[in-house]
Length: 131
Image: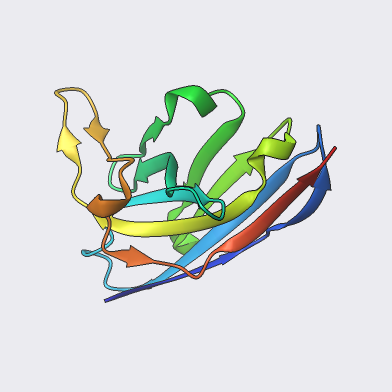
């Protein structure tokens, strides 16, 4: 079992930055890929970024690449999502997930950005961006 606890969400003005954190505990072997997703009411959960802690490989949603950075601190069992140049459309509940099996591309471990690939989820942290 893996437990995930997100933190760091809040209300910020457009153009600002925010870093949300995901602290993981439990089975290390079960974590595999770790990802960040976001969801607004009435819409499907959207993959933002993922990381494979084993080798640090990262993957980003194409439309979001550039403003979002996923990183990890293995000593703290924590994954971070840095969001810069925040826009009102970034307003959402941000969820951390773990458990997807990475696919080896030949040069890097690729982690899925599809929610159904992940077994473990945190409770989410709300990010609200005002214009």
